[in-house]
Length: 438
Picture (tube, rainbow, N blue to C red):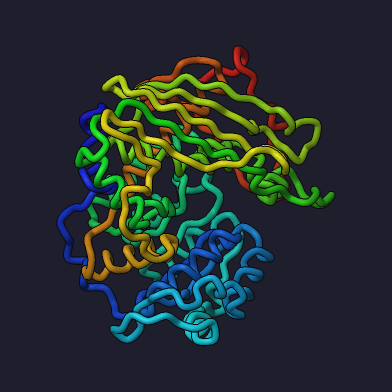
């Protein structure tokens, strides 16, 4: 994929392509049926986001590797325990925009959780059963290591898709997703991602103004995602094999989470690609572990990374991410420096809009029904993910990595077999100078 081809994946006012509607748009049933793959916290919230934002959607199928995760998520959804955050937010009901009270939400949303016992799917093939359960929308919310296979299956089945970001953890998986994304465009399927900034009016308006020249010609770019540890399992149960342990402690293992720069710092890097209208051409990065050491709990990801990207036009982008313990400095920020001014990403906007986590699901349903612009975000989110992987591999190897090299890389981190008791590699932390990008 050359830079010119890549640029065509990004339109002037948005990172996401808008193509001509297909007959599948507007021909959908009045009540859309959704199925969830991945029933952790993010998946559970995504269902609430979808149903709060869209009165014409119901959840009819759920799938997860673990039965306890599925049943726990279903219980929370049916009880409406996480709906307080949506109270009084403007939503459309019966053609009118109104704010629902918490009491109204707890009557409205759980009533559309219609997951029959035969549509509770568990195991490593649960995603196939959800895809083939008669749903219109597949919601992909597992850890990202599984995203390419799950997305490909949903596209092949002709389903509309909400996919969480990022979309892969290695170059082979990313290219697999890209191939399926191109097919989804040919089928005119609607695809919306969990890169929620693209549904947030303050970001959309600011990026539009930057692209229109409000701060002049872009000179340099900067991002920080300085946070705390995101997720750890409490402890390893002696009954768990390596694969079950790595799934339950998934944020500590590169093959399934991608490391912080891929899984979390993605939001900043995706935003910069959106502003620039393309991906960087090369990167030099460094990183390592300062405190994530000496315990099995910490797996094989880094706890800090700094990257310097360069775009084809010579503009440089510096990014810094880390996950340090409580008490350390925290900041999530972006800075776009132009010849006539600068922007932090939302400061050129006049309105905020509603919760973007809800708005992205409204955009998806409007695309499916033909009542809003057609959305297919597949290729741009894949390019942003590959940009993150490119930087990670530079830090791991200590080498400069180009876009052409990462696009040709044969690195495939996925296990070749899946079983709860399967023995996996020990998860050695990558060491620059010894680690090699293949």
